Amino acid sequence: MLIKQASDIRSSEITDKKVYLNRREFIRAAAITGAAAGLLGAEALAPVSAAAKGAPHGRKLATIKKGFALNAPDKVNAWEDITSYNNYYEFGSDKSDPAEMARNFKTEPWTVTIDGECNKKGVMNLEDVLKGETLEERVYRHRCVEAWSMIIPWVGFPLANFIKRCEPTSKAKYVEFYTLYDPKQMPGTRVPVLRWPYVEGLRMDEAMHPLTILVAGLYDEVLPNQDGAPLRLAVPWKYGFKHIKSIVKVRFVERQPLNTWQQQAPDEYGFYANVNPGVDHPRWSQNTERRIGEFLRRKTVMFNGYGDQVASLYTGLDLRRNY
Ligand SMILES: Nc1nc2c(c(=O)[nH]1)N[C@H]1C(S)=C(S)[C@@H](COP(=O)(O)O)O[C@H]1N2
Ligand SMILES: [Mo]
Image (cartoon, rainbow, N blue to C red; front, side, top):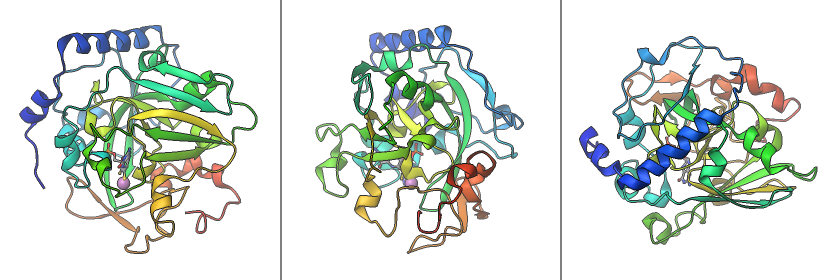
């Protein structure tokens, strides 16, 4: 795998100055006008300052609310890890492809379409999606179904805030998300390795859970393209494939969505995709994981360590069948 130099990444990420200033402008607006959303029952302990350093690409976010951390003294992964080892099949299926192939991906202007069972159907500019939100650092564990993991300092805001603004009807039982499908910009979509566009879904209570966030930044920078700019999901108790990138549509639906990986291989990937060391992937064990940057494997923990906050969502659900 090709490991990119920090200097490469930095130069590759620099956008046209005007565009960059616009971006800064709305993010600052979002941060300033944001209501002071209370921190989650934040287990604020391990300070991010103890972490590996990020190598910024130079598009800083203005104001970020800090303080949410893991309740374990895990080392936060470096910018270099998080931006050079990616899954983003629209830009190739090798871990090193997205950093390279998404380099010139155009994320401005960007709109998000709101559709389905809600009162506020329509098309929103990204600026309006972020407006009024407090961007908050969330240091989350990320566990990929392929049995690797990282600790990632996302910057985002609760998906619940966005959903409330859409005013879902009582028929909305699930939320469906769509990634941009643009074969011109996304060479990976010119081959039928997956069904495009990439689709993911959450049950409404999972989507409304305070741990579930829409992500717009990484460390204190605008989210890099390879990580799903300009807007992606983070649902930290679920396998990585639920974390859909570059979201262009949110649809409220009555029936359980068919997510891309479940459609691709239903006996390997389910809808729930909760991290569960007790349910192996048919081709490998989920009992341990390789933390990127570490030598020894770690034991994988149920719900990726967020069980105290999310286990009650699944009372009465057979998590072996509903994997
Ligand atoms: N649109 C889209 N979203 C996606 C993927 C993808 O291929 N396409 N891969 C998923 C998988 S399998 C993982 S592990 C995470 C990786 O996110 P990261 O590269 O930011 O760590 O993105 C998820 N979101
Ligand atoms: Mo993944």
